[in-house]
Amino acid sequence: MLFANYTGENAGNFTPDKLRQYAAAVNLNLDQFNTCINAGSHNDQVSQDFNDVSAIGFTGAPFFILTYSVNGQTRTSTVDGAQPYSVFQQTIGVALQDNKNIMKN
Image 1: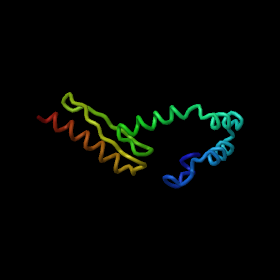
Image 2: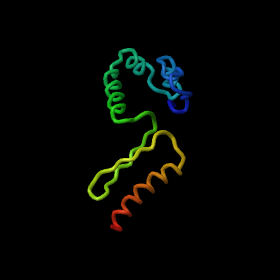
Image 3: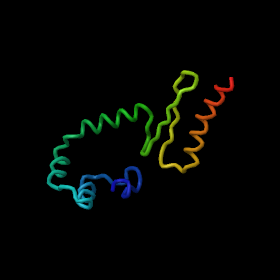
Image 4: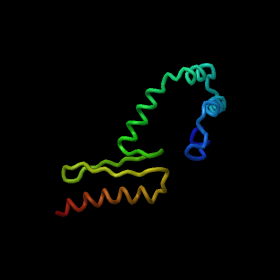
């Protein structure tokens, strides 16, 4: 529901009123949902999660990490955002080529 209603950064898609509308649309228990929203009981965890992913370079969702080893060294590639198959294919291809080059030497 959140992704389906996303219209851009800072566009007001996730205000408390909008979240309540989404909750109702997917038949959540609105009493429990409103209690949770009003209490802000998860605000600290949400802030910590945001800070954690920002610190490691995540800039949006979805965000994919490909970690692989070449000659004992860990390498990491990322794909940021909803990308076409060709972007994933290229990223994986680079990792495979890295390993193939090591195997030839």
